[in-house]
Length: 122
Image 1 (tube, rainbow, N blue to C red):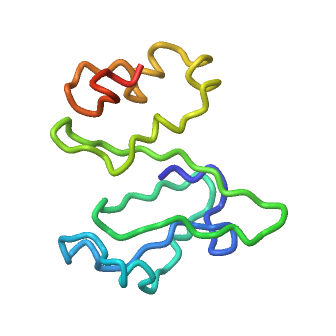
Image 2: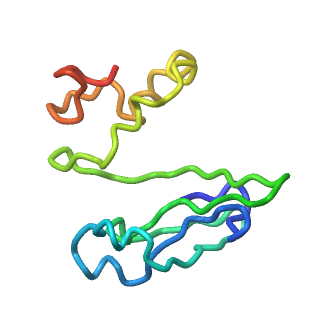
């Protein structure tokens, strides 16, 4: 996570359940409300975490401050991400994107995985 703005509890910093990655499983329905801690960091910081840590977005309770970030992750072709996020990406972003940027975002992948109705997300 590259923090473009300050990540504070008040601005909705990412929240995590410390040590949850050691459980080697997803949270059960009952555990979805497990106690979390805010991962706070000043703008410009990078946050690196083990992807199996149970985490979620915090709520921004401020009226005039935002919390923007650039998220990056790697997922091997043989593992699908939890969400096909490109399906909810604004068409304006896709239409205005450069070919190299769209490729980095996963559009036009030649992989047999991550497809929508059998076709690459192009």
